[in-house]
Length: 208
Image 1 (cartoon, rainbow, N blue to C red):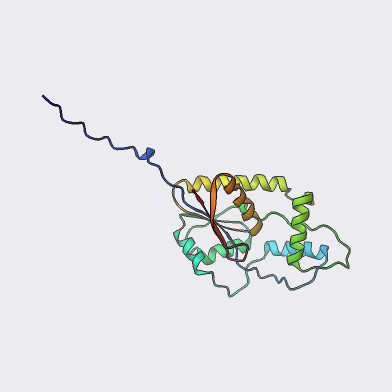
Image 2 (image 1 turned 180 degrees about the vertical axis):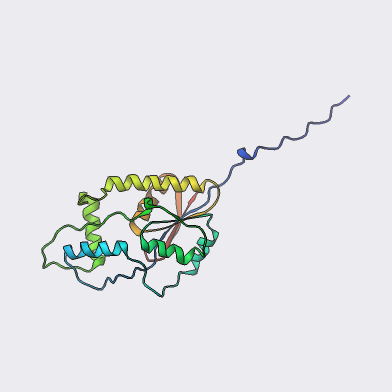
């Protein structure tokens, strides 16, 4: 006598492949501290210290695309710096935001130039970043190697969170976001949407 065919065994939920969510690295909104000035290297050092503890310029409206990204994210992280915190408050719509110093900006100590040599903050930032990156000029702050290790740690933390299938949004800073993005690409993530380095911009990475 023929035996009935065995019932199919349900596949364990633990064996079902879940596609990782996207990782979106966004830059904060425009800070309140004015960049319309000429500074010596020492004055820029003081300017940067104020920038690090300052908030956003009043009256800004987050772009709809970033608001939509935040609405669709399963997790939102922000740097501990006030400009990132205020950005998070502006787009998170009351949702939980996880604050972590892991995402703060890499330092920008400028090299010392004669007092007659003055530049706007924007250009001092470029000079300071070049000296930090090329010559390891850190003045006792975080070194390039230390920042690279931190960016790797940040990337791995975000990947682990995205493995659940939910999108992960980070509200942080231009250059450190760039460093984290390099680590994501090295781990096989693809940059699929890039708005550059402007304020409120975002870069979306997906595992392909």
